[in-house]
Image (cartoon, rainbow, N blue to C red; front, side, top):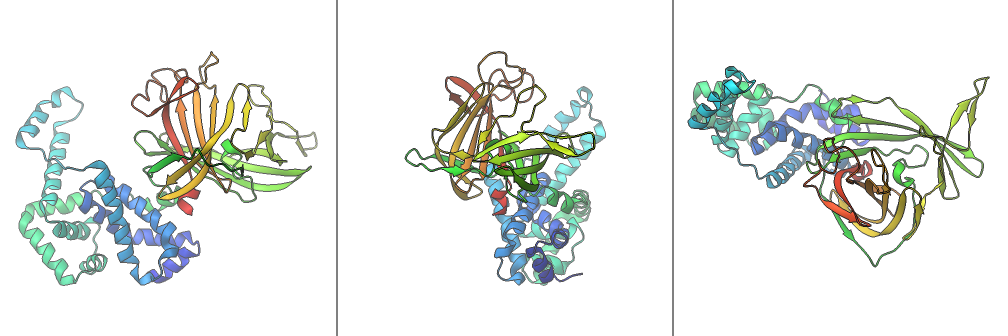
Length: 447
């Protein structure tokens, strides 16, 4: 097995295979540690994922590779503490009366008696684990979760092996042999998926939306040349990449990733031609779209989507415009933003001011760009969608926040005004909109 120090060095140089090996070596240890803190397997998996992603982004800052285990354990603890405070976890056991009531309800549900009994047994096991002291619970979970040796557990917790043995002995003594066997079986049946490391690297974003804070700065003003070209989310520079994560509100769970990248660029008249690939992965649909290709011209602080066709000989011909499926023509759009700048038509795109946006503990001064438009079933002139872009001084969009109006879609559909009841609401130019989702770019997590 390759030395951890060597794997850390390779990971720092961008070797994802090395990082995969680190994940595989420590994933069950991290997961078991998180479970011993939270008492919930699903939350423990969330913590494990988010802790490893922080390791990946922060590893270059670890000065002493030998301190990795201690450093990593503190990261896991930090995420456990955050979730504990956010969720106010209070595990509740099923008492005999509750179990009996539940059994009498079986006739009215699709669950079998055996399913109810299995769940009750598991709850008893969870309660037994929670009855241990924290130090006993930690050792027991780490030892049984995936066959780690006493020496490995001692190394991870940074305690003598004799201490690990003593805590494990006390746990067995308290739980008795039969319950201890049930505990061991339950822990082994709830391990992480075998492809956890591969899933982790496929979309390296937190499963839960990081804390976002927005403060308006009415006295500030500046201009930005927008390399993201506002709503297209693709930095129009060579080798540009800007993946976007979609977080539903109010749950704050990652529901999809919009992958964007510039394939190549070339000179075009007085500007530049940009070839872009995009695709969207919707986690609910459990599948990934094929790549879509698009071309844009960037010239004199304006960008426009253009169309590529082939002549009879198969040579590529580039038109000056792109005709969309509804017959509308692509219009030039400004990539230079300043307060008061606007573009009007059936849609409104307006720079309304400066805001300080803090995400993942990192603050950005941004121009706030507001967009309203007509989508879906609207037959009136009232906008159905309101959106906000926050564009930082470096030209990158930091946050996209979408709200839907009353005519966006039918009441029973996802994203309708009615289905978003309870979400935060804004009124813009006399029209009400409710918050649907936030999008955050990869730059937030990579810097």
